[in-house]
Length: 156
Image (cartoon, rainbow, N blue to C red; front, side, top):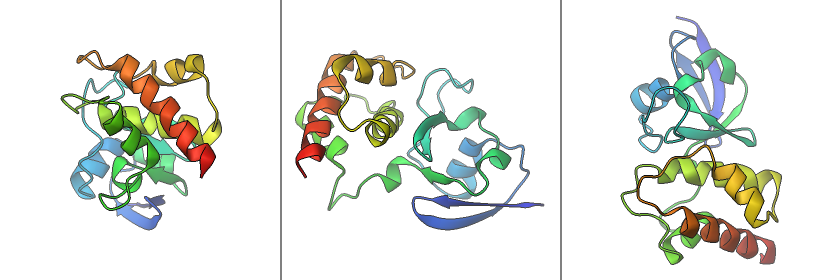
């Protein structure tokens, strides 16, 4: 099996696997990352979103070979229970999560947005989250949470 090397949540990682397997399969199976969830399997729902470099990407339809030498961040690498990321704190403060199935993907989409644009407006946040589906109807609170986190991060 060929080896694919990348940085996962800041840690150099080598994976011996079929390079055509999906990144989501490798993350959840071989590497034990349970944050990215399997949703639609077609890159349409955002439940499996991870950040590759500074972009939110659906891991379900991303082949392993395409992430060689790249930085991958999953929800496990965003913050810790002791020191949550400002987005995680804001989602809690704004009560922007309900069942939680979509939230890790939404947080990764939001983190990618804030990495590229630290002061987004309402429209930019909505556009960044447009590819994430949430059946609980929390979208307005999620937008408020992202804007709140952006404000907190700007004042740090």
